[in-house]
Length: 449
Image 1 (tube, rainbow, N blue to C red):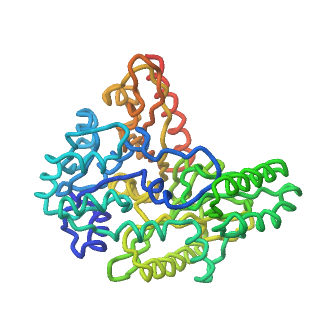
Image 2 (cartoon, rainbow, N blue to C red):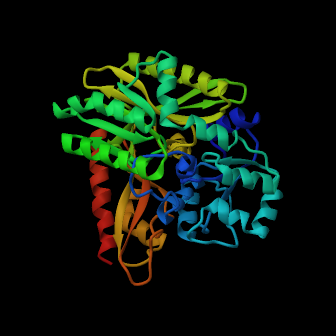
Image 3 (cartoon, helix red, strand yellow):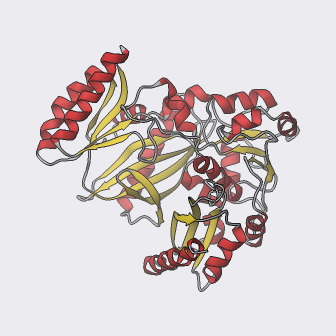
């Protein structure tokens, strides 16, 4: 059974709610979009780590039975049984015959003639999390049309610099800050914000394509600001390259972060999907809470923001799912555009789960749990550890949404860290907090095995 949520995405992006989709959940997209841009002097992060790559399995509970999902590994049979017992009719999973751990799934697919032929026969439409040059090549190699625009559009509209400029031009309340594209511009901005830092304010510097806390520096003292100035200046002198693509923003006192999603149809129609309270720590995404504790006026502001941002995105060639980060200040003032993530988001992949398994009026927490494991752990062992927490007990339950990340970092005879992604449901936030604590405790039994 296909969810109404998925039907809506298909209708907006392809014109028909029955179009078979071929999903490639390329969570490493930002790393590829960033390649032509200069960020902060730091060790570059790898968007193709095994753990990030295996987050692709989140697509299993989004796609429908007529769809196809390209994964670097087959589903654990135990997870397949579990998902089917929940009532999900799963997509056809296709796995490249040539897999290299150092490559993305799209790269593996391009090197796998058998898989390419299978994709050609699907008669589907290719939906990546966000289009990069690799998914564009995959569309060309298979003859599958893209459900969304090409890599050039995605790269342009996902820059944090682009997002800040949209906020200003659209008349939305921006987070106080600056956009920089050269070292000279950045040094001039530092001259302006260093007095604020010396007075105890926090100022954050972000790479234009940083994600999940990567490419982010919080200036919380004069020494840190001076050190960053020296690093940037020395690198530019050494390389002869004056480019620097960053945004600099004041760190606002806030009640909480928000994430809202809308879908821009090929015809330019903008549909507001939802808003969630985002859980973050120093700029790193930790999860989502539903419902967000907002007043009606805040909902109105977000819907207006989605409409004007969506209109601008469409004018710039974009159609597809877009998520926007926002901030509700301690003063109750909403800053509706912190950054635009014009691609499928973590929230997107939760849509089918919440539509089916979240009762009206209930609370929901989406997050991941870190597992410290001694050996590869099959899904059935994870399921056994959680036991009755997975059952619906008076509207309270844990729903596992991705198990491929549990063993993503597994190595022979060596301890490793894995992740388990889940959505927790309860009648209210108090019981939700208790369920979260019980889940943490239950999962620790895996670490002692």
